[in-house]
Length: 526
Image (cartoon, helix red, strand yellow):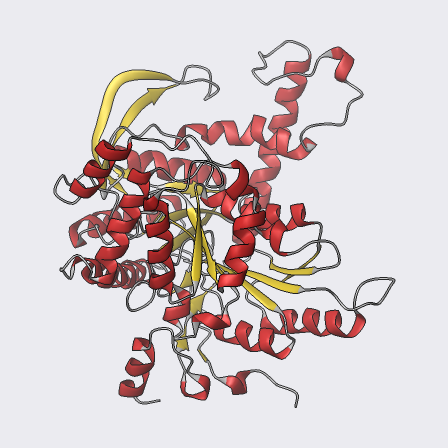
């Protein structure tokens, strides 16, 4: 396809493209040399061996145990935790606990301040030193567009709303919590997404976990991507529907499950499923991958299923004007039955939304637990979201929002290219601002994050159970607020630590899966 045609397709906003739309799709999931996973499992074996020795010492009083203990009369009760997860927490996680939950004492912008903490009992407890580590480069917050800020001029409208309405609502939307600011926000979200209606919830996690059970129930089938967020998994389980998991972004596997569901129906009784709901995310927060939305929409239409897309990490972060993966692929929002997103990332606020056809949103308003039992979003919070959304849409009379969207895309490409040049193994799509760097061994990520903090760089490390046990990683989140100098400093330290820790395992044979999206990519039966 000619570049002019491609640019015009990318610029399409909420319009169906049919056979005209094609987009080059590049993702990287390079496997490490065989000796790396072997050494990783060997390292875990040593940690587990010493963990059992320490547990033996704790049992006989040779070492103090700080873990909570069951009372003697509760010994025969069902355990609250799985044995291995509890063992992992005691003997492995505790060695890295100083790398997590570091107290932040400033605005979590491109630079932030951290409280200094020390532990004298091997990370079981911490105490403050009274010192503050200032001007740390923030590479971990989901501040994609840089709107987590304390600019007094920008926050003037939020200040005015706070003075007028106060800081809380103290009621649900069905009682005394339906504020005019909430209605304004819901109308703006619907307009922003080019859908008929939207409902706002006060918590992003609960937006999924309390609304999915309203949409499906017993006799329905949920097809869930294997890497879906915990909130989606919890909502699916609470619904009572049958759940089947398909391999991550594997369209052949998804179509196989859809075909079997349509042909075989419900187990035993063989009746047709009441509904088939496909649940996916826009950007997967641990892998940095982007959903194969055009293909999923084709499959959804072919098998007459419904589609639920969680855009928590993609809304504001991708798309020519920041409207998420639907705009990124130039698809029609009407083809997605339920659009979900959160305000905790690109909008620098809290809460989430559900959007789609008016009849679906009206039904959710009257049946969702989040509408009946959770307090509404406070007006100052709603005003912050409104302010940011209007800025992205250009309603504030400036180009600031569009400039930030463009800057995020530029920073993402720049940072990913620099990491590839260092021979580091990185996961995800080239346009994803979530950039996981594989380090495999827990001892290496611990050493890495401590060294980076000494250099005033704050990073997030991720391991089991959020990732496979042998794929411990560092996850960078790129922001439009990052300057080139900040990113270069991070890259320089990554280069040094990559050599020191021996994590430069890339063999320059990235598996770039280049896919041109059109209807011919999927075999559609007549």
